[in-house]
Image (cartoon, rainbow, N blue to C red; front, side):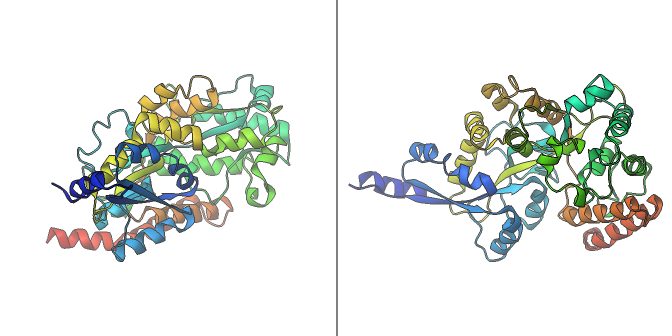
Length: 412
């Protein structure tokens, strides 16, 4: 009999309520509040188990997680951003999923792939994120007659007409320079590897990346995106409602924000990312959050049972109702009827079919920051595109130097 089983047997004989096992869970941001409403059902189904949820701000989560790992104080279950999975796997801080949560075939493949490192799955997707186009339907129809650009060429033609109609104070598309996601999406759409030599060197000077980044820079050069967006756009929702920009690349967290902050008189829609090739869907980034079980958990079986409960289709429906988080399981979308009545949400269903992971290495966050830095220099004219790509590759090679050293040591 396990320690939990023995403790539970004693609890069942006790005259008063008794706790046989405690599970500690860390959850980030809004989900930390919502999770407290999802665990009572699990506790009722597992007498003697108590789940303690600690809410942690996203801004402090990564550092707190690493500090807890070093100190041997990780909780039993942790919500993590999908891009953190490679780091936790490399540290051997979490347990592999293996067969602990059953069939994951109905998870969006691109979302599930973010949890797979070196052929093993280390986290269970909890909710899904990606990015697509939010846009002013009325402003687009006024110049284009159609509201859904499906290719890069169609999008640029629409942006040109929208910009010509809006004038100098208008921005056809809002592209904040500190955000690296849009140019990376466009590079992934071109099939760019981003890294080479087993993810130990940069591949940003490659032709697919150069083509994609040239397209991105051209949006600024032709005047449909503004270099000074960070200072000119002070409130995204007010400025969107006021017609100061038409298109915006963002994610599902803004569905509720736009619905509440943009007046009902303003007609806005969402649509998947345009593709560089006609007839093919435009890919986007695979994001979201996953649940992992700490390798130091005193109750791994119970921890996995909690994860199974939280990723069950019915629980994911409840999470969507409480927080607006899009389920990672396609079966949950169908069970909840999420995309049936709202075409703005339905666009995310379509986009999530074609999402791709960024390179699955712990250094990716640092690399992403260098992408934003060098592209901003190119946008402002301080570097040519070729110089920016060469400098980016040098920076990335420096960031990955230790990775190359480790590979060489393993080889010998």
